[in-house]
Image 1 (cartoon, helix red, strand yellow):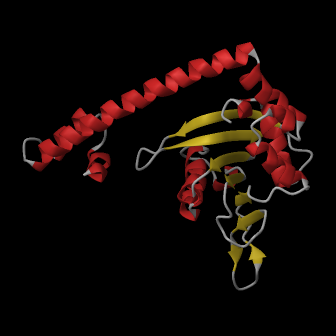
Image 2 (cartoon, helix red, strand yellow; image 1 turned 45 degrees about the vertical axis):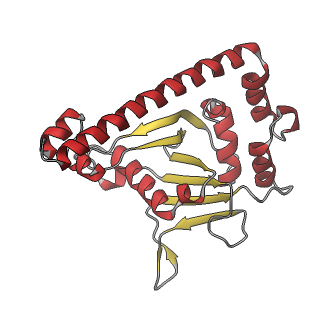
Image 3 (cartoon, helix red, strand yellow; image 1 turned 135 degrees about the horizontal axis):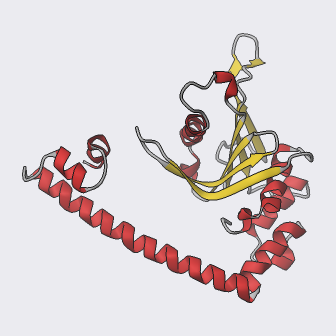
Length: 237
C-alpha cells in the first residue's frame, strides 16, 4: 500500500471518496513518514498528504483493533499540530487536519461504514470548529456505494478484480510488471535488513538494562550509550 499511495492520484481518489469531495487536489504525499517528538514517542505515518488548500491528511491502515485505539488517533492529531507550526506562529496559522483510520473491523461497533469525530460544545450541540477531524472507515462493509467499492479494492488480490482503474493500474505495476516487481524485491530486501538492525538494537538495550539493574551503569550513562535521552531510556526500564 505504501508504494501504491506514493502516487498522488491514488491518494487523491481515496481522500475524495472518504471526504465526499470531488474538488480535492493532492499537492504532495509522503508514505511511511516519520514524525518526530523530542519529548515523547515519535510515530511513522502510513500516508501524510497535503491538498491544494493546505489541509493535512494522515491516513492509517489498521488490521488490528489495538492499532486504531481512539487515543492513537488523538496522539496522531496532536503530533500533526506540533509539527506544522514554528515558534512564534499565531494559532490561526494552524492548518485544518484529518486523521483517518481505515480499519479491518468495525472498531467503534455501531455497524456504520464511516464515523466522523469532531469536538463539539456539549451544552449547545454546536461544532467547536477547531478544524481538527478524526474519521474511522470500517472496511468490513463492502457494499455498492463508492466507499464500499473502495473498501473492496483494498482487499482484492488481483488488480483485474478492482473497481477503480487508478488503483488497479498502480497495483498491476507492482505485482505484474517486471520493473515494479523488481522494485518491490529491492524494498523487501531493505525491510529485512531494517528488521535485523532493529533486532540488534533490542539486544543492545536488553544488555544495557541488565547493567543498570545490577548497578554497573547509571541510567544517564546507559541512555548515552543507547543514543537516547535518559527519560526515553527510563521508559524501557
